[in-house]
Image (cartoon, rainbow, N blue to C red):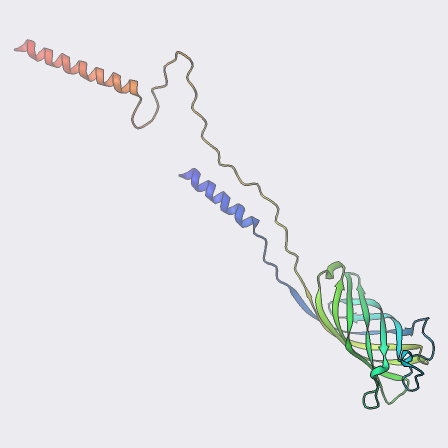
Length: 247
């Protein structure tokens, strides 16, 4: 019975150790600022990105390279790079804005987060012809390092100020977001299942030798029982013989 309890306890312990810990995702908010530049790509003619007097629809679309630095809670300080496309075809007098799409890669010492801008992002004119208001809606679509598997969204509100006509701008932006990181589920180390030890087999008596009659079995060995019966019979026979002689 004791051996059975020990075996069952060992098996339960192995089963519990083999169950991985339940992982809980970690979510944190991000707030910060970024500063940098937006420069028209070299292949862009200078006439592009001027919605006020386009010669054709192609002049309403322009591509920029963006780069700069940022500081944000939890993420810390880092750099960003990416590309954006402005499409001024939605430009109207009531809504003097361009649709902004593209990607923005945030890089820190712990890894990278790739943000993909939704087409709801905008670059809009203001009262100052050299200043545009920007708004960004972005989703995390890639990550490396400590951020692998991250999901979440970012928003940005800021301005771009003309440095060289329509070809180069300085950019400032307030960032806000939410990032969810999955906790890695530890892979349990396989633990060998203990093998119950079996009782040692009975020793086979040598040829010609009598088996051990000192076995503690409850019924005793057949030879011991036979000898006991013979002894008891002999005692009874002697007793009966003595009684007969005494008559």
